[in-house]
Amino acid sequence: MNSKNKKLIHSLLFLVLIALLTACGAPADKNSPVANSALLPTDTLVPPTAAPTETPLPTDTPVPSPTIVRTPPALPSPFTTSILNPMDYPHTYIENACEYLKNKWDPNNSTPGTVVMVIMFHSIIKADGDIPANGIGLGQFRTMLDTLHEQGFQAITMEQLTAFLETNAKIPARSVVLVADDRHFGQYFDNFFRPTYQEYGWPVVNAWISHPEQTAAGLWDENEALAAEGWVDYQAHGVIHYPIVDSTDDEYIMNELQGSISFIQEHYNKTPVAFIWPGGNFTQRSVQLARYVGYHIGFTVNPRGPIMFNWVPLADQEDPQRPSYLPEGAMNDPLMVLPRYWPSQVMSEIDNVRFIGKEAAAYAEENKTIELEYYDIVCAPALGPIPDQNP
Image 1 (cartoon, rainbow, N blue to C red):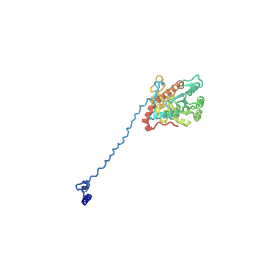
Image 2: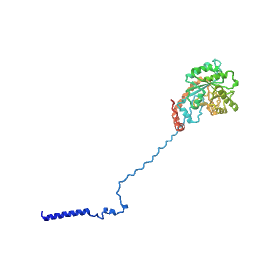
Image 3: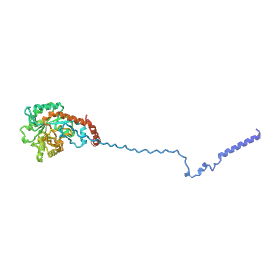
Image 4: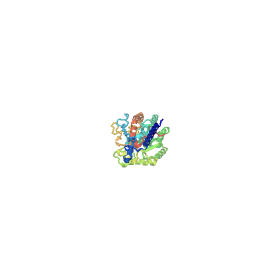
């Protein structure tokens, strides 16, 4: 290479080097946005655009489910039967439907259709010959009790009957109450009722006349001894024992009612729960006073039919075919005017009583779902659920 070419190459390299040095150290262009950014006020600086932030959608406020209002079903009408006399129809006595249903369906109480036959005895004659209209011969009497037992009946006391009628307390599904009216010596019970007590364990009720001045020697002592044995159940049958009528004054009525309580408490160490109306007679006033002094139940001599929980057959009007039967419905207290069978009617009525119990049980089962639904809606909030079966 000649010297001239060498000088040209050196000159070109020098120019390139100068250009590079000038580029590295040259001031920035005043019109460049970067150069002018330092001259802008700080509040006019535009930050770089950030990535958009997603705004969370508001959640829905929980809305409670609407309360379902349950409409209680209509309760069925009380059970009726064509077996009763058309003028004798069932009367109820428990006004509170919830109380009634709870006691009715409590599995620890008596089952629906539990039926009670109340029988009165005035005269039991050893011979079956000449028997008074209100009496029964010994042979017939024994046959009657044996038949009742064979048909599944069991005898109960007045206290048991009262608890059943008031609260549906447990008693045998077929029960009988044997009521011997008036006063009797111990031999009467030994001859007629003790054999049945020994064989079946059946108690008997003595409807006791309490007047002390009319008491024969030994009568109180013998009956006190029977009462101590526990199978003769003494209940009130008045003091003077004259029938109560509309003209009877309050003083006499109170003496019959309260006097019976006092004498029975004194001699038999118990307070009677039942008043057996003398002669079967009663009045509106006497029924009210009987309640006032503490009686729970009372009995007529009208054989209307058997009785069940909250179910008592009574008549509201006089019956020309049965003029001696005082109508009880107007008393507005069925438990104080309960019916009783005469002994001469029992054998022909046993099947009817059993059938009424079966009918009532079937009717109750047919309506059980409705009644329990009503109880659950209307009654359970205040009274709680129907109890469970006790172990």
